[in-house]
Amino acid sequence: DTEVTQTPKHLVMGMTNKKSLKCEQHMGHRAMYWYKQKAKKPPELMFVYSYEKLSINESVPSRFSPECPNSSLLNLHLHALQPEDSALYLCASSHRLWTSQDPDTQYFGPGTRLTVL
Amino acid sequence: SQQGEEDPQALSIQEGENATMNCSYKTSINNLQWYRQNSGRGLVHLILIRSNEREKHSGRLRVTLDTSKKSSSLLITASRAADTASYFCATDAEEETSGSRLTFGEGTQLTVNP
Image (cartoon, rainbow over all chains, first blue to last red; front, side, top):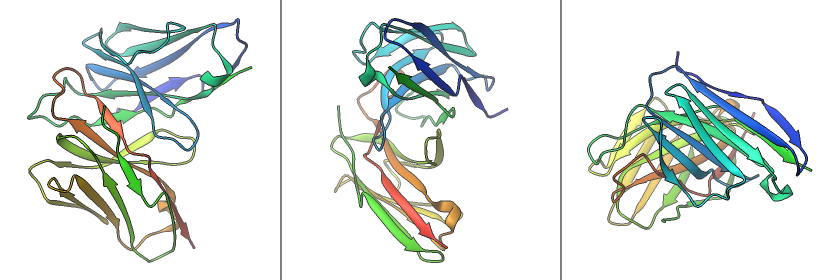
């Protein structure tokens, strides 16, 4: 199985709602990522989990809260979002921690299209 | 953090023609990767070239890397309508020691007309 799945595909929420995005992979990958992508722009890294521990937080506002319950699952909890947070949220996974000798390919899910009203 | 730049921003060609996209970056890297994204979908990894490699081929794809100029190019030969997508370069910076931090270029939107 070389697939990263994300649910839901689309999400519309109000600024006072609490929702969660889910990501799952069964490739045995130990690193998982959340990216945010605005229209016609490249993906921007938000968080990296390595071996179920948060290793990189790119100064993301606290209204986004990541969680890695186990090595196959990654969640992104959303609360009190702003309309400018509307974007495509991409999850990715990769085999192992990066080292200078070992290139690491990331496998992306199809994304969740989030609209904040 | 570094920022990759790609040119052209948009490229429109006829089926059967070759498409060349360029990417420049600013800091030292371990490797450079190219990804493809169909409209509104996830990214698909195409090819990776290490910093000590100069050229790599995969099927109809040819990637070059010039570390002295901090630039890379992606050539797609004999293009097909199904190649229509956005193409992003992504660099894995040399100084990173934990996790895998990819920095994506701005992307090239390729349209292949039947």
